[in-house]
Each structure stands twice: as C-alpha cells, then as structure tokens.
Length: 151
Image (cartoon, rainbow, N blue to C red; front, side):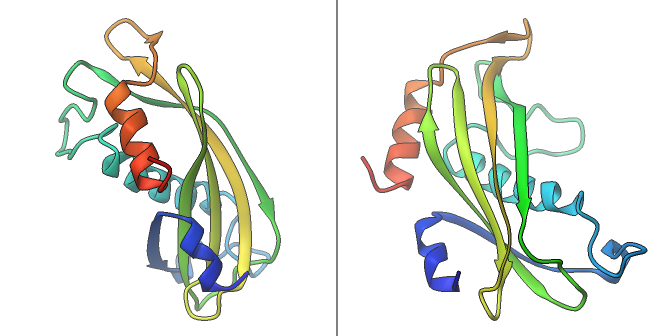
C-alpha cells in the first residue's frame, strides 16, 4: 500500500511513534493499534457531527444526547512497527446500518506508505441518558455520504 491508496480514506491523522510505545519484543505494543484506530475514528466522527468538541468533563454527545459507543474492533497486524517512524491512520465508513456505523481502518508509514495494520470497528448510536440504541441520525447519515463522496 502506498500513501496514494490513502486517498480512499477521507479522514487521515498523522503522529510520530514514541520510544515509550515499544515493548520488550522491540516493536510497538499491539494495543497501540487500537488507540491509532480510535484517533482516526474520533476525527471522522467529529467531521460528521457525531461527537463534539470536548473539555474536561464536558458532554461530547450530540445536542439530543446521542453519541457513539464502540461495539466491535479488530486488527490484522501485517508488519511490526519499530521506532523511529511517523505514521498515518485512516478511517472510512463502509456501511451504515439502522443504529450502527462500520469503519475500515489502516495504519501506514507517513513517509514510505508501508502498510502496518488494517482493521475495522463498529460503533452504535446510543442515547446515553437511557443507554438505548437509536437510529443513526439523518444528519449524520447525510454527512457520511457527503464525506465519502457518495452523496
């Protein structure tokens, strides 16, 4: 995968790997991948209005108390990540269900495009006050279609 293939991911975040992310086996600990996926997913959800700006203790749900909750995440590790390297994490939506949004994620080298990890996640739209699943709001659906270039 080259950086050019990241063109299919409308949201991409970049970050350096820190020395402290390395584990006893000489590569970045596998759990970091989920943090990288999360960073891209949160940036995506902010772009579509599913999460808002937050300050310490602030409510980050939509005005009607609806927000995302992670239901599933998975990763395929393709190549160990070794310090020093700058990475990019991409997110795109592959499916919008009644009350769920399915994301595809990738993590690649920012400079060389080497693909390190690919995976996905599913978030459910939840009314946090009652902890009930609710349909994905129409404005969020429309924002996804626009961001993905399908609308």
